[in-house]
Length: 260
Image 1 (cartoon, one colour):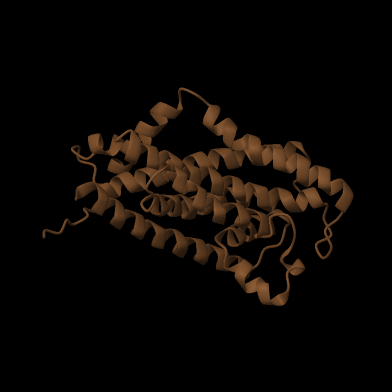
Image 2 (cartoon, one colour; image 1 turned 135 degrees about the vertical axis):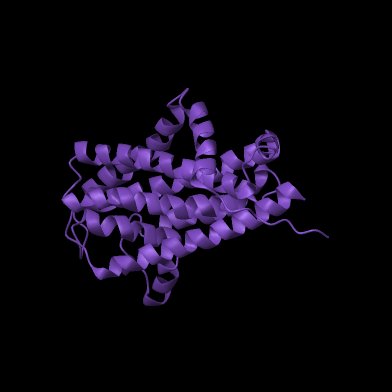
């Protein structure tokens, strides 16, 4: 049995795939608008609507919408990146056979993986900027440190884009995405998106802290509320490690699947 070495990727080769993707995306702004519609609806219905009933968040003493908005921004970055490297890559890998046409070129499997993740990160950053503008127009920004949400969204999108790519290599058909949603939806609901960690029993808090979305929300919410500290290094390290491990798994499995 012969082994296939994965060649080292270069920025230039990975950017070729990014350019290819954006040549397609530039024909329509619909994907970016769709990525913004859902979080805006959540912000209006839960952040603003439920917020009128809740008032201020106990222990944080900020309006409920101000508390929820940064968390929705984090989930916007997550969903944009994850959806692109899961649904999008699965279609290109299994249905459209796009990568079969790319592999005869100088691009390696690793270059393809890096290019797809980079494309997802750029889209996630654009949707995060759009949502931040919505927050500003809605009067939900209370600290200038909220601008740190943009580099935070880049890191969040890296972690979840890599995770989406890794998970996609295990999926056999589109119905398998239902299993993915069995994890993604509960994580969205229970990772302190809509209420603080203090509402959980002490025994469950470590489980919630272990969720990648919880760490993502902390990385955005704390600066957005004007709270900076060395403890923000925890989500940074977590997301870098999470994304790097997922990237390694995705690259190895894509190489086996595409070059066997």
